[in-house]
Image (cartoon, rainbow, N blue to C red):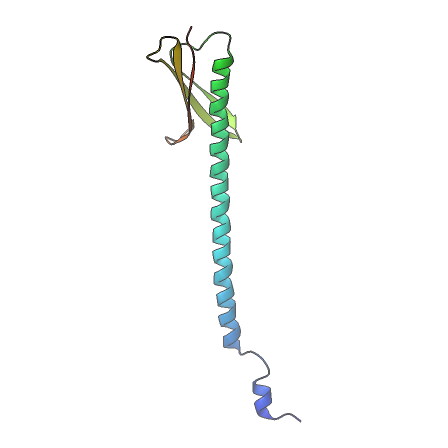
Length: 125
């Protein structure tokens, strides 16, 4: 037969279990918060990478055309990753008459923040 002292120490008290659950809950919430922030950062990085590729494609199209791009500003919109992105290409002369400067900026349709910007140089007409 067991005595009463042995029965009192046989398990965890309700208070100990509640404290352990509270600590586990706080740790789980911290992990979930880190995962959510990581997912948001990954989505932003993915969008910036797609915007950079869009800017590079616009420059490549301008340089591959049979005629050099006209001096001035042109713009357009492309859907990238199911999000509309606006691009603006500015072509300007340089101090060297035979070379043009081509700047491309990409932004979200509603945003003022530039997601990608690239500068290249090409032959003038």
